[in-house]
Amino acid sequence: MRRAGALLALLALALTSCSRTLYEAHFAPPSDLEKISEAASRAPFIKCHMPDGRVFVLERWSIEEGTGLVRGFGIEYSPNRTRVGAKRAIALRLADVALLETDRPYDVDVSTGSAVGMAIGSTASFVLSVICFANPTPCYHP
Image (tube, rainbow, N blue to C red):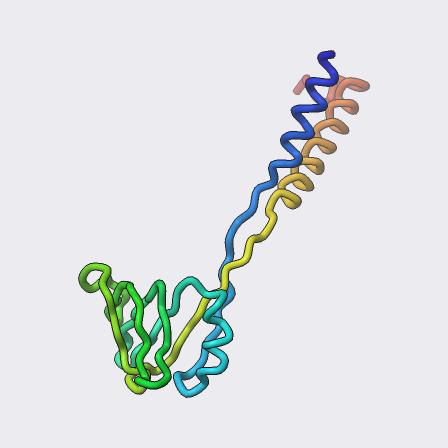
């Protein structure tokens, strides 16, 4: 019964894998709206890089082709990347934007690397323990 509990705990640990969200950046000039529109469905935010170095990071954003505006709710950063003001509704003319950046999130499973590292470390520890058990003099006496 005890063995079954240990196996169950090990199985639960193996099934609860760790993942980490990474972002894949896509850049386009405002004139390439096709590329940005394609990423719009997968990008939770857009960064509008201005010619003077400022950056606007917008959530819930949209590009209005008819008016030439990009609208969203977000934050403005100065050229040295300090936050300017509070989060607010922002509308920018695409003609004033130097570069648009969208970041698509995707999850990466990081548990495999941890399991491999743990297996290597455990194997090395086991091998050294066997060697020291077989011949304790070099392991435990100076």
